[in-house]
Image (tube, rainbow, N blue to C red):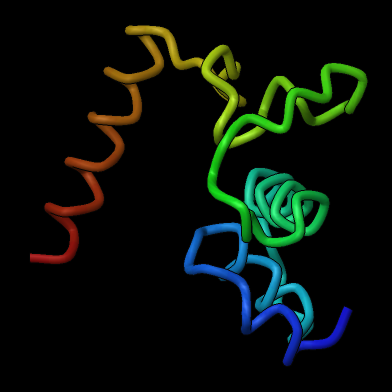
Length: 94
């Protein structure tokens, strides 16, 4: 698919990430999944809705799947630890 074809898609995160992929930029795993879903659904030109393809390995992560799972869950302990690290970093910048 060419950049010109993708630029005709409606605005969405998938379009943005797919254009970045075409440009050779590095994407996170989540950005790659969203870009793949946009590509598979032809840029959501007929509307942003669930693709209803449960056999797809990315279906549980699909942006418009009402039952999607989160890629990462963070415990309360991990949140507190990250908060402490961020506070230490911000003190060092002052």
